[in-house]
Image 1 (cartoon, rainbow, N blue to C red):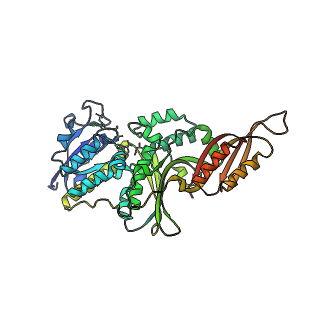
Image 2: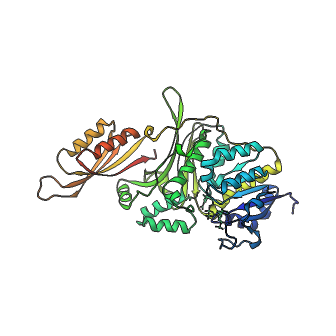
Image 3: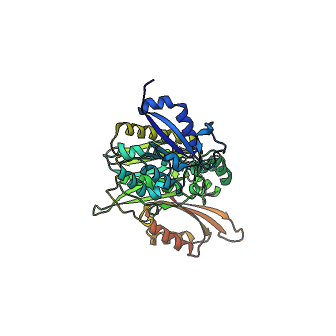
Length: 440
Ligand code: NDP
Ligand code: HSE
């Protein structure tokens, strides 16, 4: 066996991901040493409760509740606690102590990324975070390194495993939202507080991270438009199916170029309709898929496990090996590139297609009134389907009807003002749903 230099590795957290990282580090130590050019010694594992049951069988003596002491003298600190505090304090402590940091913590990076990266820059340390977006899928390194010589135009993808698992099971099996969410939690896909998943916060954090890398711009979380999937019900899924669509929670990051050549970006997360023939429609379970469109490279697609302990551990360990190689080779970290500093536009500027579902009085002239309001609002109709939902046998016209209107591309602000006018028009009984149509 080669006599390698030993690097001390501290692990913070042994939950769904951390327990698998520790297990693989211990099991595959020799192989990892050959790849890293250094022996990776797991010095300890900081947790809240040293006696808690773990997903993998780990030596009891490695556990401690004293993260601060464990970090001192470590070469690489792996942060897998999640959340903002004490993760932020411990990551900054690790950097100040001279360690490189590996983290999967998108909540931390999307809210305190600048602080963490600046602290690392000051001491020449590196922060690795491949697992912070799209689980096991290599997407950070491709954006940061492989595409550093290109110009990314658009990223569109499914970046949250829990919500894809929920929407997929609702679509394919008619499963109940709450039941499937509980299963996603049991399988280790969901965040400690699953509101982060179902309300789109987790996907928005990942979108901020991906857009920052792709557009060389610090994208703060509050620049990301966010909508979750809690309003998606069985009726919406059935109606989408009827029209040839599936509902997916999408993250879209776009570079926009104005007529005068000035550039801005749009970063948004929302449930959207995707045509059933589109590759994103066949992303099932907790899998993720990310499309990247770059000026020179053209279209690229990344696909794989978006959540799950052992799957995410793969991305974390890849980062650990990279950090170890850098330690052995020496030199300072490359830091983040944010020089482009592009402004983010509000959601009202976004241009896309929509599907509007309305319940209307089934009376003569109603369709014309609805069409008139859309036309006045500069929203052009592409398709209309009307279904009688409550017939009035004694009348020459019906009682109520459902109108499903597909639009051509429209500006979000025009669309939302038009929907408000429709709601107030007197002929519309209820706006059932308004969904964006993405994917082409
Ligand atoms: P878990 O909630 O399963 O595990 C968190 C771990 O951190 C636990 O071992 C817990 O200790 C420990 N911990 C939490 N707070 C403290 C504290 N104050 N002091 C010491 N230890 C603490 O999280 P996951 O493993 O699911 O996620 C870890 C990170 O990875 C998160 O940032 C998450 O967003 C990210 N991630 C998760 C993925 C997944 O599929 N689960 C995929 C991609 C990224 P104890 O066990 O004693 O309570
Ligand atoms: N809760 C996250 C998800 C974990 O479901 O995608 C992976 O980041």
